[in-house]
Length: 126
Image 1 (tube, one colour):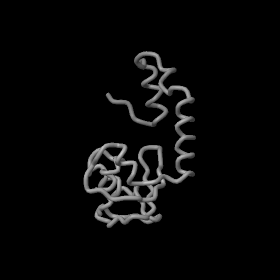
Image 2: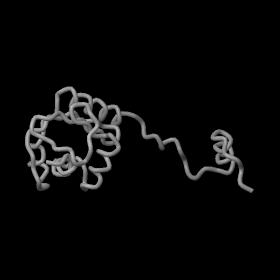
Image 3: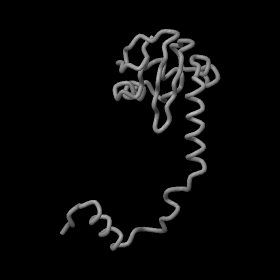
């Protein structure tokens, strides 16, 4: 079965084209190797998937041509204990860290914009 179809059926991506893009961008690896969207995935393969800041390390337990409910999709793979622990640690860090935009109050002033332009090195527009 194609890996992009499996990623879609296992509900890691909403559409097959998003799964294809992730595979092309090397965010999906099978046994540590970069693969193409048409890679023939087999039961027992180890897959590493990176979505955003989270990463899953999985072992393929089943194949499905159809996208079913989430409960059924979870039966297609088994996540490693280390992967689950690391994802939960990252979720806790994100949950307990302060909101990045909390200190921003209202729109930036002209002075704030000029300071930002000076900091980024962008020339002023005339």
